Length: 112
Length: 122
Image (cartoon, rainbow over all chains, first blue to last red; front, side, top):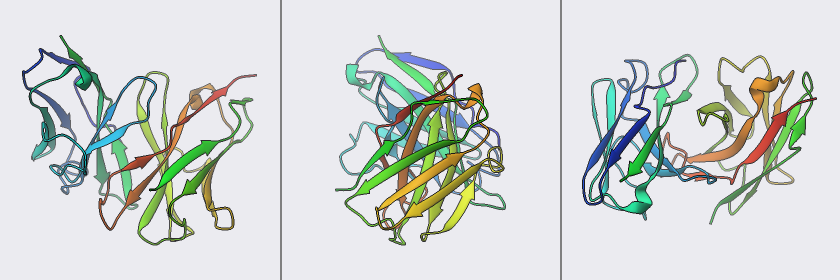
């Protein structure tokens, strides 16, 4: 299956809001509400930030929110902080003969 | 709490088989509520799902790797393993084990190991 499409980079100033998009197809992002988002700092493992499009795991800041429209999902970070600077990846369940998983190419967030 | 830890050789020769193990603590690998996955990240940072095992023996693999990959469980050691055959330089990556807790957080990898670097080179 093809990877999901994300912008290579986004940036914002402290306190601002940014949105990262994740584009797929009717076989993955558009099929079910099973999109998740991960934050990855250099040298660290990815950390789950959003699951099932819009739900935050325990301990994740309310500044992180998710949404979906059609075949495109989005991660919004409000009140940007320096520690938000990281790579962000989306992932989706894939409607296929087997229950597969696919990732986006990743987006580098720079806090100016 | 649940923790995962990968282990295995950091260097594998081309055409040989890569073999990694994920040691699990805090939960039994036989639990039916979990999907146990392997994921890798290329030097260019792209994440790629390799495959998973659940119910101690049912598996699903990435179609692009299916002919070369095998995931299995060792219940006596509470760990699961990855074997990837006929490796090439393109298989050089950081390999992560991860789990999906279906009862709480379906279709999302909520716990990851720290990752292990595997380089394919002669």
